[in-house]
Image 1 (cartoon, one colour):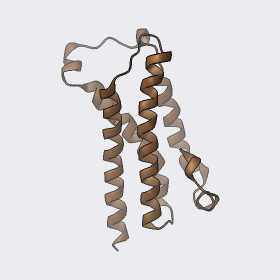
Image 2 (image 1 turned 135 degrees about the vertical axis):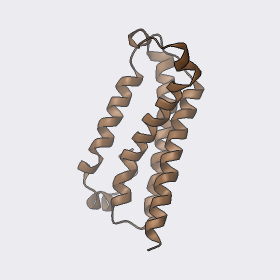
Image 3 (image 1 turned 90 degrees about the vertical axis):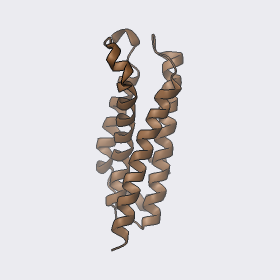
Image 4 (image 1 turned 30 degrees about the horizontal axis):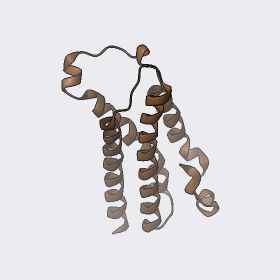
Length: 141
């Protein structure tokens, strides 16, 4: 996700500000690549309430937030912040889709689920809208 950063931006935002996002990225990768046989069995109520989808939305929403937050706090123009938010949201959504393909082709007893990717993307969009609103509100002052 840091591929879209130029040298000027990196001088303003130390890489240490991105460590929580990088750590969470690794945690998500490990969790999503856990073989199906190692996952706990879930009760029927768990599936009826779509808890799995809420977890996906929260996991990817947090991932996007941890990468967007350093930009929100940086001394950048509002338009630059919003561009980075959009890039991170897009990258996080693509990462969610990539994880689904990794699960389908490389992780035993796991499968591709388009609704999981949709939940990932919804979490990312919620984070984007929240930070965008807060960033625009602060820019008005």
